[in-house]
Length: 464
Image (cartoon, rainbow, N blue to C red; front, side, top):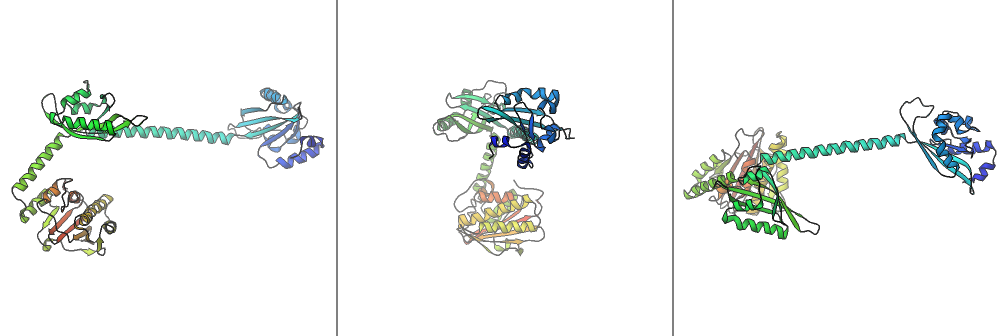
């Protein structure tokens, strides 16, 4: 650093040379003024902002260079610098020599130069902050845009949620676990208990409608969520004011206070009466199937084929199985540790080669995965192979050497979602029939063979 006193002792030409060498390539404008606000030296960049050649500044006052109006705008801040205080002048303007008519944000800082306690000059620094301001403005505008987009997304999500709730006839509600008081209930929630949307509806009203045989279990579930913070889920009967019986399914999550105590239950409820009726009818049908001993192979085959729209084909011997197609994969050993992933990948690859759409190959992979998993779980392992059975059809064979499937339980495993006992296909068979086009089943004490076929295009009439 060169002491200011040293620079001041040099002749003007020396000062010009030194300062010019330091600041010649700097885009920031610099100028030095004496205490009477006369320019001692200015850089080229500074001169760009005043519109006066750098050498023409020397010995002239700020007023001479900027004119009366320019001086009037800056007099106060420059006098502060003369008095020994740093000052900032900010204005929206463009450099005098620029033809650009766009607004600029020009900031000029004035710093007093001291020699001891005395102010011997002023350093003026001019910086163009336009790009910085524009950048900040763009960031702010982008932030506003993103916030609006987020708000719009949230609004759309809320609309979709409400549509889903209305479509599924799901009622929403909130229960205070502290006061045992219903905080809020939607119109659909009220309707589930036989109340109109504009009627007053309380927790006591809910309790009054619950079937006496189910009341204790509902109260226990509420108290359990209050004590443990666990999820609330119950299905129970309620009696409407007109005497009709309905089934309610209710699920809720607790919220907690600052110390972790459950304070509210926020949940949904649904009138599932029609589902219960269907389940009862299905149960009665299954009972009739068992009562009439429909386990005879030929009759059972016809029944299962009928109720599955021909998807499930119960085989009495290997001759009833379909002809093997052209092999796509080798034999894949299925165990608890290996084989399932390879089987899924082979089925997917074969389907993609047959130009299956995403939904079709995903359904095939689901069905094949269930078949392979059942071989592992119920028979301790098995073997699989993937074939193509003509143009646009993938065929997968899965076999094991387990003790076979109990045909007495097969109707329930086929028709009843979630039903499973040891040695049966359980909910896997239900899933296979929902996702595959055709399923052949050959089972007996010596093991089980499943053949799954999936076409490129879905069947026009699907089983559900």
